[in-house]
Amino acid sequence: MTNRRLLLLLGLSISILKLSALDRPNILFCISDDQSYAHTGANGDPVVKTPAFDRIAEEGLRFTHAFCDAPTCGPSRSAILTGQAIWRLEEAGNIHSTLSAKFATYPDLLQKSGYSIGYTGKGWSPGRLEPGGRTENPAGPPFQKKRLQPPFKQMRHTDYAGNFSDFLAQSPKDKPFCFWLGTSEPHRGFESGAGKRTGKDPSKVIVPPIFPDSDIVRNDLLDYFVEIEHFDSQVGRAIALLEKSGQLDNTIIVVTSDHGMPFPRAKASLYDDGSRIPLAIRWPGGITKPGRTSDALLNLSDLAPTFLEAAALKPPSMMTAQSLLPIFKNQASKNHHSAFIAMERHDGCRKGGKGYPCRAIRTSDHLYIHNFEPTRWPSGSPDPSVCARAIAYGEIDSSPTKTFMMEYRNKHGIARLAELAFGMRPAEELYDLKTDPHQMNNLAGSLPLAKTQATLRKKLFDHLKTSKDPRVIGGPANWDHYPYYGVIHTKGWSVDPAPTSKK
Image 1: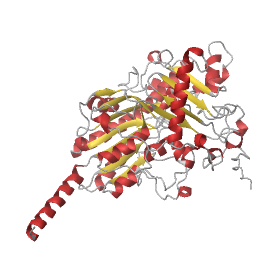
Image 2 (image 1 turned 180 degrees about the horizontal axis):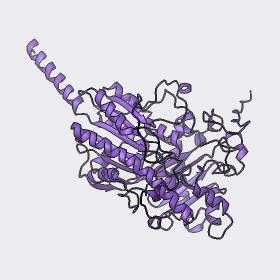
Image 3 (image 1 turned 180 degrees about the vertical axis):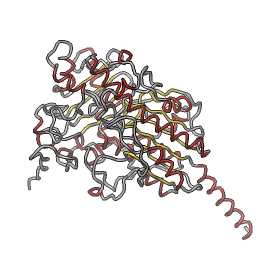
Image 4 (image 1 turned 135 degrees about the vertical axis):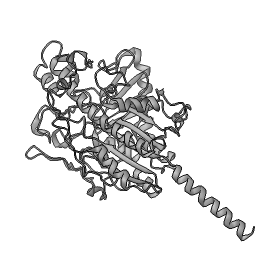
């Protein structure tokens, strides 16, 4: 081969590589804070208005069975970033912890491959970066300078879409980008009466059967909807920025939430109201037959390998989640017939900073939960003095709904709901989703479902063994003893030290 021909081929190869880099999709990941699956227009709610989410669903893919990896902020976000289940992430399995730098994250891998990365609002949080050997948020460099006056109190003053605009302005035009837009809404607290002041009708609210149907609960839900709408409006502005810059159709847009609503028996529980989340994805260049609805069961950790493969990168072997690209291509996926959800320590609301370790398998027909420490209070102790937050049942955020249920917990019609929210739970739970979509009637131990229970237990534990969950395979399971980096409101509260091994 002549030198001239070799140079021509080399030049052609370089041109192809440059073209490939330019053709790699941008990624805009939009994540709300504490929003359940039901609460978008596209998912059927008649009150909340979410035109941005609805548009992404209509022009892309809407997932009806997407689940967080853990119904608690920090662990859920750690799983999203690393593509791993929380039981593989050591301290990051707890909220108010750290995410070790030894765990690869998709933003870092994308940046190393030529992507421009950044985040605004709430990225990986809450916790401390330094103990994990990190100096920068795993979501990327922060873009937080722009501020706005939110429509209601309790909302964050961050101009999320404005900061995304700043990111786009400084991002090189010849490089793809990956940006994390994370709002603090609809995390509590809410401005009381905000929903009514926007003209929402309490009588039209669909009250989940896990709550009492009262004016207090209906208005609490309306205030929650207002915060969801604030998130959605920021997503809409971000979409408009992409349209204006001509980058919309080469951008994967994901709209989702880290876990479910901040209400009793929802957030910080493995039931659907705590773990099933809205998910819509738009990508004209990669989604076959857009406008579809997918019933595939998936975890948000599946997004990390999806983003990497979309960028023509091979996910590292430590990422055990499964790419969604086959679903994008309208192909059957052998990996998305079950979702797996887990919990360790949420907010340190038991004596000694203990958590409530549990694991679940969610199929299209059933939810099976295994509670490893059933003698502990699942929603936190009723004694506020043993809670880092100094509130009773402190795994559940304070709210009008929680207060109402606690005050009237002995009243007919509320007593059972309060027991479901605050009471103890057995080692095993099994729910038939066709007859009990909100998982209120535990069928574990019933003879007609004994085979189903055994099958699901085996599937769950086989998965935990394969993915090396220390609670199943043995070895240190130190979640009860890892440091707690949250604000401690109770004098003398501390985490019990890990037991020392005997020599």
